[in-house]
Length: 181
Image (cartoon, one colour):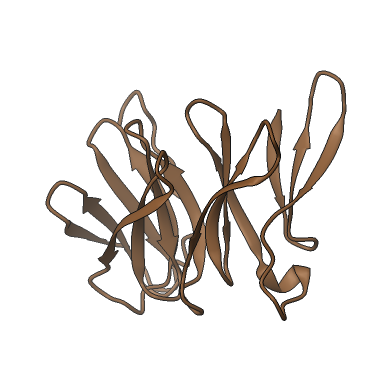
């Protein structure tokens, strides 16, 4: 099945491409916010397919159990942190761009626990998305407010900064060619 986030209704949805079946599932709700104000944003499936992780810009990162369709794990973030696009590595870690706080979060997917946050060299960079690089075992981070790409080495916690050739890049996604690197 294909899993999607539905921003306007604060729900997860599935599409079965073989049958055409579509289904919708409620996720956590923050008191006082309308469904659209939760801004459910990104989704990543666990390696075993048992958990559909999602981010909410105004709240949390959580796991919807794909069998029970109930919230299995929930990691709340302070208001303004802004979890956005996520990626998982092959060791069971979920990496999350924290747009509002200028950080990257490291979540243990099996435990559903926040392991660490890494401060970007420029906390005003507004990290928009992360990409796991299996070949180099690093996290690439693209930003909305800075004209650089960051490379986070999880082993050391160190960042390498790659300046872009022009201003106003406003990068929203980064992909890696797994053959050439």
